[in-house]
Length: 107
Image 1: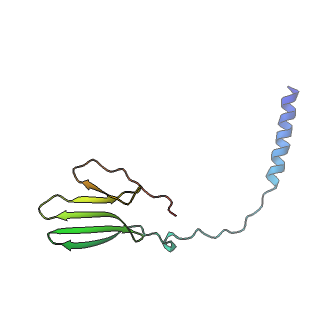
Image 2 (image 1 turned 135 degrees about the vertical axis):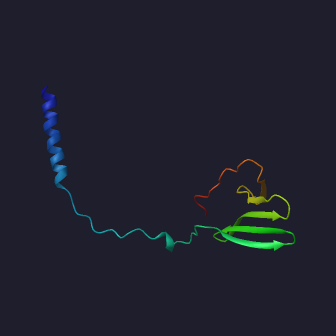
Image 3 (image 1 turned 120 degrees about the horizontal axis):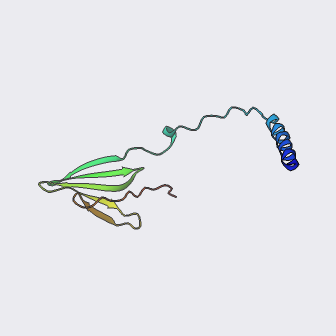
């Protein structure tokens, strides 16, 4: 029982000493605005008419990552840039959904 009383008194003394050492921090500047960064939130879309089909090119930060092809009297299809290589993968609107492959960091 005496151990608990001594431990409690020691704990109270330590907590009171730690509580006295509070300092006021200097003002911290606000974080930089996301508008100042080079990141563009929405992709740039370029629409080209090639014969009987319309081609839409989607770019983020100047890099082409997706192409949508709309042939006349045909269903449209997409070409996605494969991240593991330089190949383009075709995706039809009837195919199952593609899992997002977001880039967190790029060097």
